[in-house]
Length: 171
Image (cartoon, rainbow, N blue to C red; front, side, top):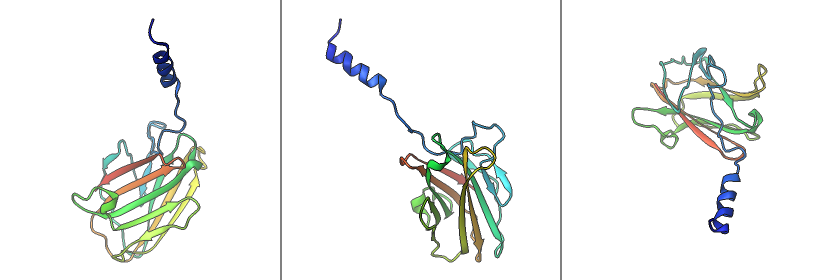
């Protein structure tokens, strides 16, 4: 037989478990016809972390809602942070390349960074879905006062264990 200390090491490695190793997601696998992203009433599937969608135009002076339906394997109350990055063009494909963003963080004030003055106001509401209690619905209500050129969107989110994910939506 083998060395007992090697057997003990192998045993401890194989019995280790990870509690909450998954990041929040749009988790389309749960419901086959679910549309986890709704922009101004138009619904989109997000099958991967990189997606291409049809352009949705915003009108200045009116509400422009972006609704996200998010899932976390420990429950929707564990989602702590959701950031929406805008004003991304061409090859700008990371949140750090965006200078216009809105951040919702559980228990904190909403952060709006808009150095170009595109937004008059941005409100964020987050609530557990009344439909199934398994999703956190986060709605970004944006009120544009200045046109924003065609832009990609990046959504960054994490849970209370800092398990994070980034979804890129190309337009």
